[in-house]
Image (cartoon, rainbow, N blue to C red):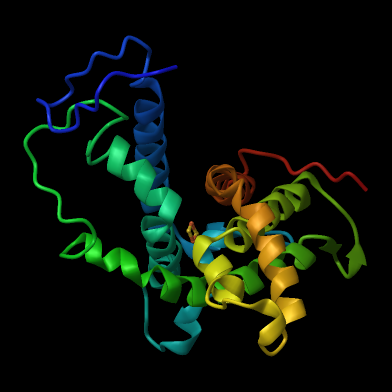
Length: 251
Ligand code: FES
């Protein structure tokens, strides 16, 4: 479909588009509000509700309060800044909230009003350049997710599986796919060399770069799948711990 001349410098919201262009940014905005609202509420809940049987809520792991004697607040407050920073600086995340939250612009050829744009060269958007550092830190969280993945299949010392095992597994796998499809990771493993056959470990780096590139095509999908999966994993553990939901053992 061919759209008319871009109208991003036009008055706010003005466009000649006749399709339902506002549906996607509105759905994204509502999803962000729901997730941020839920995760903020969950972060202040008692830590006892973050565990049920072999399951651990991903919002409460790792428990860094063990390193800080006397810390009485929720463990979630010490770690949630990591995934929050990672997602806020994510290349796809930026596109999502620039359009749905900042309305700058809301969609292609939709006016954003008379607002200057300096790119990511000044505060606050220059902070988005921290993304690669959040990538290094999030890898530690992924390792903890995998520890809880294996824990979720051990019931009283024996291998087993409940619905919660699958919920925890989905969270771990989608988070791993989201991180492994990261643009910064793609650059890290192979984007900064001109010639794979000329550098040390070039064959392995080329293979890694091709693998991350293949996943990178679906990065936006993994962004949403992992966001919903981590929220649902916390909700599932919490509801079971509160006695509202019953965890069904599959075997
Ligand atoms: S670009 Fe999205 S997680 Fe790195």
